Image 1 (cartoon, one colour):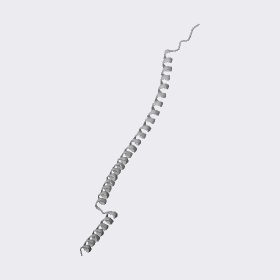
Image 2 (cartoon, rainbow, N blue to C red):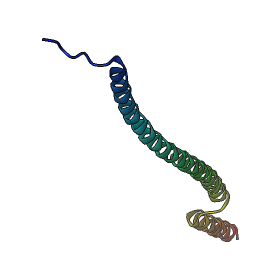
Image 3 (cartoon, one colour):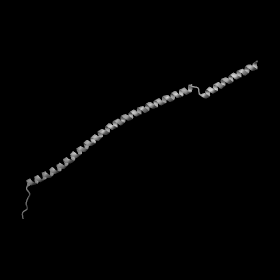
Image 4 (cartoon, rainbow, N blue to C red):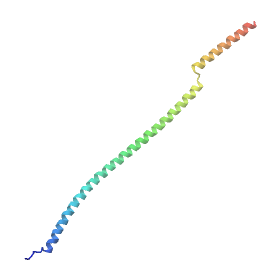
Length: 114
């Protein structure tokens, strides 16, 4: 019985065809990956722009908060200085009563001396 030996040229063609099929699948996967990477790169760029915008917005809000805190501190200091130099109603009343009492005592001393 003789076994038929395949032609070595046919074996090479079959192997090349198989390799070509495998390479086609690799190319499809790589092109799909390239599309996905491009989409991700676009997303990353958008996120970077948004992050920069948020950072700038945060910085502006922080500067506003610092300016507001300084303004409130100055206003509080001005209020305290004003309250220290301005007479309160109680201080005014005490002064008026003191002057009236002094005047009344002076009148009593004068009357007693006559």
